[in-house]
Image (tube, rainbow, N blue to C red; front, side, top):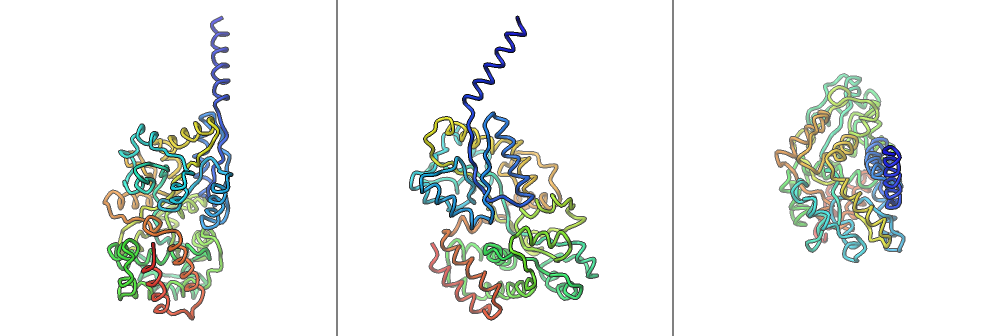
Length: 409
């Protein structure tokens, strides 16, 4: 009878779990090999609660995915959860009352005490209420180098941006593309911003993107950055790929010497079985100025009418910040965790460099936290033109850049 009672109790528990379980569609733009491996960690953890993660991956990156996500939410066909970058991308949706307030969960679980740096939770906060879950810290300020490419070219692996530029002729002589860069607009503007922080410093970056200072943007320091961007576009002239991960693959296979790309590139190296320090080298701050941005990703939860789905939303929001989930997700993603209290001893050499820079406080906000999506879109468009049209001089591009900065919101 004892065994029958136990069995009946277990059956009742399973029935109760299945009754309260819900399917949640989660939209995101993580479709590369490394990204897919990382998001699978979220799905696995959520499915273990008895609920079901319905994957809504949208190919083409954030620039393609965000308009689709926003259109669905404003059009009355919301998903249950959706990715945006840290910053102001969902601000209007929150103001319209379309996003769920997570303040009660955040307060109950002490998010303010565990999320580091605090600017990440600030980006989720509007009028004192918290509307999103920050899940990682992605930094843009990295130069990824193929050890094989430089060995094939007979030159030492560079330790700085200037050494990288100086090595370009030796790479080209061996048929190796010096700088891999895809054609998505955010890649070229992102590379420019990395050059700005690395070569001109954090204070100048904050004056341009934080203060929207057109005079600084038109000045001599930024002119030096545009000169470096001109070097970069010459080095990337034969990089005929579209997506960022295709450009990363050129580095992985030794067909390109390097790539300026965020730390999410680590996920691609990992999937390819490459080892940091052996197969590839990473230079935070381009080996010049070891500062990283604290951008990254957060999840928002549109307001739903279904009570079971609403309850499951709360479970998903909570588990995304659990220590073991943070570790498993970020190790696959190549990003840094938003929790400062977890063990990342399994991190590779490049991730450990990022953790050291973060611990030292050498960080800046991401442009998404400082400018509106419209202003950043104008900057993206400018750099697509600049990197693809050699007739646009650095001086002309700088003048247009300064005008956008001065009118930014």
